[in-house]
Amino acid sequence: MGATLHFDVLIPNPNMEVLMIEIFTKILNEKTKRMGIRTAATMADLLNISEDAAYRRIRNPNALRADEMIILAKEFNIDLNQFSNSNTNMLSVEYKALNFETYTSDNFYSELEQRLDHCKFHANSQITYGAKEIPFFYYMWFPALAAFKNFVWNREFLKSPKLNNVSFTVGDQYESRHIKLAEKYLNIVSHEIWGYETLYSTLYQIHHYKECGLFENERIFQKVLKEYDLLIDLIFQQAECGRKLNPYLPNLKGARYKLYFTPMITTDNSMIFHSIKEKIAILCSQMSGVVISDSPHWVYSTENWLNTCKENGTLISQTGNGARNKFLIQDYKYKKTMLGL
Image (cartoon, rainbow, N blue to C red):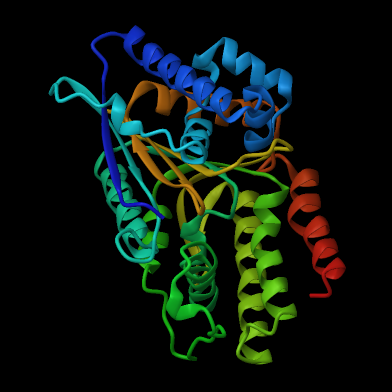
């Protein structure tokens, strides 16, 4: 993947950002035209939307979400730096391409820790998390599972050459290097929006590694699978009481917690870090990289999408007992049985 990119968008008035998005759409149209392909059809395929929805974004570029913009920019090699300006009166947008050399998973976790510290420092902060996968923070409670997810990320997505022909293993005394992320996330009010893919993506990864013989031995496989079961139990208990929990200190109650289930599909993990002073959007994709921004379009398009998912979903924490049991117990057990796990 490419190097880290930094770009800033000058916004002297609200119309400036709209203009930036319109210019982006114009460049996209010109590129697809030169390639001899239909913009709407290509956009629909890349963004997993209907052609009608793609046409609506072309006719009204401001409807293009921030995460969608990143996917299209990466696919068509549109340099977002061209929207930069040296004026100091600007809002920042930062894009970091994931790779195994200059911006690794450890760099990303350090970035998240800074955001958590900022929220902890400001009272009444909140995180809204649209989860394509189970939020990173929960894996950190479970050392074998955390090591497995880090291994998969570096081997399959960052393409680290040193892991090409290596099976996954973890020592008995291994401790999660980033457990402090879990401990800090515990104390920040959060709304999480999950879908079916959220619950099953890691389960499929475990199944795939088992089928391909990529666990060093059966004991390691069972250890990772057991910890994933413990993680799901933790989420169920949190949703039941509406508070975040520490799996090793069951009497400790963390910050308030809401969990929503949505049937809608999300392409990336999207987070809004909301303090009394500001809102920061972080969009992270294992394939496309990480975007960090306080720019209105990036923040509000992400926030509006997450609110849409909430409105079309079901609150399954505290009051949603039936939906909670179905999603986190019945459906999960059925999927494990189907996969032979």
